[in-house]
Amino acid sequence: MILATAIVLIVTSLLMILLVLMHKGKGGGLSDMFGGGISSSLGGSSVVERNLDRLTIGTGIIWFASIVVLGLLLKSNGVG
Image 1 (tube, rainbow, N blue to C red):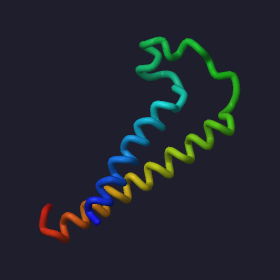
Image 2: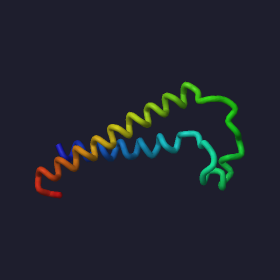
Image 3: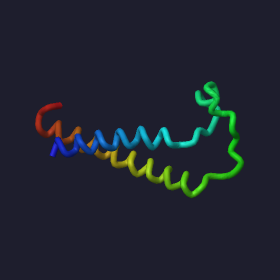
Image 4: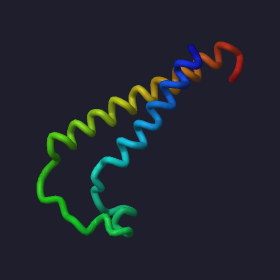
């Protein structure tokens, strides 16, 4: 069970990195320093962006839950 939870944690961690990097920069941060703020957004968020937001939030919830479950499993086995 610990191994399966660790694998879920690794997969969701990599997926979170990918999903966060796919998001469009909102400006005002470090992305402006490197030329990310050159293009301005003319409209609201599109369907693709909203779905990407939902997927990122869902992955984040699974990621957080796997951390909690892994911590509880390790504590019950006397590892942590």
